[in-house]
Amino acid sequence: MQHDHREQLKRSWQANADAWTAAVRERRIESRRLVTDAAILQAVLACAPKRVLDIGCGEGWLCRGLAAHGIESVGVDASAPLIEVARAAGAAQYRVCGYAELESQADLLGQFELLVCNFALLEEPLAPILDALHGLLAPGGSLLIQTLHPWSARGAAGYQDGWRVETFAGFGDNFREPMPWFFRTLESWLVLLSETGWRLQWLQEPLHPESEQPVSLLMLLDSARR
Image 1 (cartoon, rainbow, N blue to C red):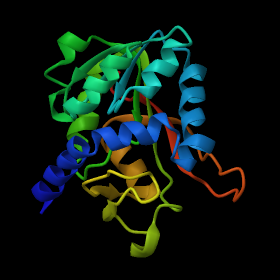
Image 2 (image 1 turned 45 degrees about the vertical axis):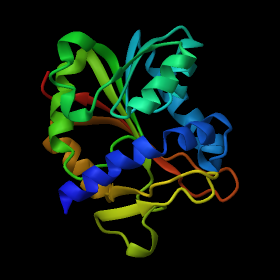
Image 3 (image 1 turned 120 degrees about the vertical axis):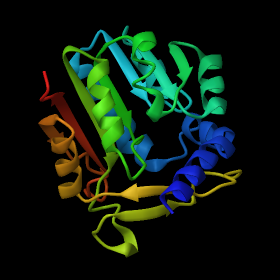
């Protein structure tokens, strides 16, 4: 079952590349437009990194945003169609690279003051990925994660870990494949990060300006192994 979810997740990002690019670039996703895009960009700028690795960069919007502030970035994503449209827009280096390949690509990628996972940690077995990220950190570097806020995203399945499905309803037409993703409670996130050698520096809960409900969970972490 786990293998099936991972394969379906991969297929979704291949099949939906054009639709996702349009949704992001036309700012159709309310939570991104009102809250989360600005939240991640401000958090990166507050860290003042010289070089950033955007893991799961999609069509490259964050790399372009960082370039506008003079920050060098490299974007990696397992979806070749998304990397293709990111490269066409320029502003950064981009590489087709799945999370499982990050460790083997470390010599090519180099080291970074900041690693960013912006709504990119969607699989169930994240420990191998989080372990591998330590090798990409420059001395004194940090890991910045933004994910759906567990309480707001719990849905009808309740507040317990498990697979959920994103249908992209309301994001525009042409989404051809639903996307499975693995939901974690706040406790599960913190336990996972601690077990993989990451130490929490700070946590933020960006709020929707109208409902005043938390939209996302932002966590800045450093390596406890250095």
